[in-house]
Structure formats: C-alpha cells, structure tokens
Image (cartoon, rainbow, N blue to C red):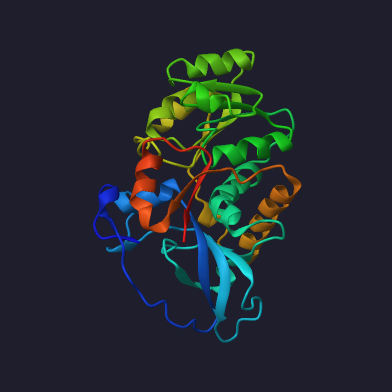
Length: 316
C-alpha cells in the first residue's frame, strides 16, 4: 500500500510487487501485522518529505522466510519485528538484519506490531530524554492514545506522578493515572498548577503539537522540560526563545525515536526494555482496532478523526 500523491486517505493505493531475494546481510520477512501510527499520516500528507509514490508504514511483525548471505543472527521461522524506514504496509518485506529485533517469548506478532513503535517511543521518552526520579511530576497529553497508553504506566512504574490529559471524559476514564483530566486546553495549565501546589510539572510529554503547545509551556515548573514528540493537531508554530525565558528558563526538545535506536545495540537495548515490561505486565498491548491491510485508508480516517483508542493494527 503506497501514497501515489500527497493528500487525504484516498491517495492510498494498492500495488502488486515482487519482494525479491534477500541480499547480503538481509532477511525476507512474511508479515502478519503492521502497526498504524500518526507518523504514517505525516508521510501521506507530505508533512514529512519522501519520494512519490511513498511506501507507507514503519513497523511490522511476522516470521523469517529467507535469509541472505552473511546473516548469522536469524533463521527461517524466527518471530521478528522491524521499526525501520518505510514500506511496512506490505505482505512481505526485505529488512537489514541489524534493524530486526527478535520478539520475546509470550509476545505475539500482533502485539509486537501494535507496541514496537509506540512502546519504543515510550521507552526513550521515559528513560532517555530525561533522568526522572520517583516523586517528580509529568503531564502526558493524549494519554489514552497509542503512545500515551504505554507511557503513563511506564512512568508510574518508575514512581513518577502522572497527570494525564485526554480529549474526552470517556477516554480519560480509561487512563490509570494519578490525575486524569479531559477537555479543552483552555484552563489546563491553571488546573495543573492547582494539582501541584502552584509549582507546575517537571516535564510535559506532548504529541499533540499546535493545539496544546501554549498550555504545555504554561504547565511547566521553572527550568522544566518540554518534550514535543508529535504533531497530531498540526506542526508547532515558530518558537520564541524569549517565551522560554519568560516561562522560567524552560528547556525544549523535539526528539524522534530513530535517533535513539540509530545503532544495532541501541535498537536491541530499547526492544529489550520494552519486551521486559510487556512480559512483566507493566505495559500491555491494548489493540483497540484491527483493519485489513487493504483497508489502510479507512484506518487512516479513523486515526485522524480521533475515533481510535489504544493501538491499531493492519492485519495481513
């Protein structure tokens, strides 16, 4: 499934292809499931540039069906996952062996496809963007969504106090946070400061973007950290450094997962931490929706309409 032009979900089209034979250091994977993520819509619309037609999708899971020369870490039949590059919306995929991860025992391919990109994102956000201590306070936007539903329990397992925010009361009711808020961003910072004794939060995790930006900055404590990791409502407007000074010498970072899993060792370490928490039951693969791969456009419509909860997978 590819985007032949930039635009709405209707630009997604089906194409037949021959995956070919894996070359040196490569593995051919027959995919069982593909994870749906907001980043897929960014490539579809052209917000993130890529040549047209653009193969869509960044994560998938399945089984090895062939290995190329010089591959020693994987064999035919292994259960594997990948969160690299584009082209996951496909029945088969050739992947560099050093970008594959072995899926842990007790984790299904659908669960892996639902969790890898979101779960690895939650991992680097919680573990690597800042060193958080028990008792510190985090504000998590879109807390019932794909990343948020993993990030909230991950942070709480670390002893972090979590103030969760969702777009509706129904979604907020499903979030097990220390404080679960919902509704408009107007007045959110005032509510957050009320919950923190006027201090504000140590860190904000914001995947919403444009609509939540001002509320996020206003919710931070002095020298707090703003982690802007997504653009669900649109790109954040130009940032004035003077506003960061006026807000209390604030810090801002705009991270992306792939800078935290750039090497094979970083990828394996991140995957190991995620699968460990899945096996221990700290985080769970809550699959709210399943669509056939051929119905990818319908899945995009549901995602952009905020009509999804938890994770969404495309099933081959």
